[in-house]
Length: 184
Image 1 (cartoon, one colour):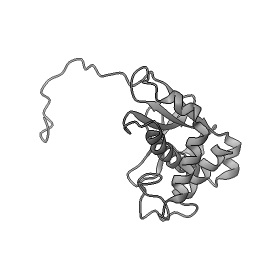
Image 2 (cartoon, one colour):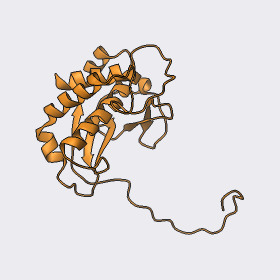
Image 3 (cartoon, one colour):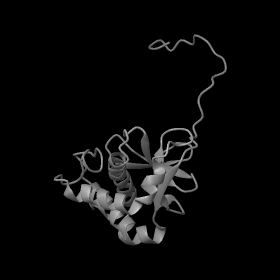
Image 4 (cartoon, one colour):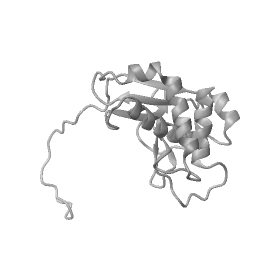
């Protein structure tokens, strides 16, 4: 029970699968490219999360789909880790078990940005987006560059902390750098 922590029963628990067999498109940059373009893996991770947000926004509009029909994810191609935003809007690297980890400690760093149909088996949104992948990247770049914010906002790269006092590039600059590399 809530508040009293009293156990009111036990038994087998059946939960839905954590895997979704669907269709997707993805973008990936090599570790060498990222090490040359970014001062740290954290900046690259922030850039990928911002780029994913912008690509999801323009892809949803291009596919004329609800934002929940198409989803985004950033992780490794071999499912060894994934990235999410923490409470302050910063990218957080998590291992396959969901535990926070330090991206600087990993041997390999090959982030992959996924856009996928949020329905089992897919519903046909990813295929036309795949054909227009270069156009999606250009439109996402125009969205990020055309925004009036200074460091990122919900209109371009997603919610970021206003009190982000770290040194280095802003999350918006990191997202623009990732999109520029994807466009090249």
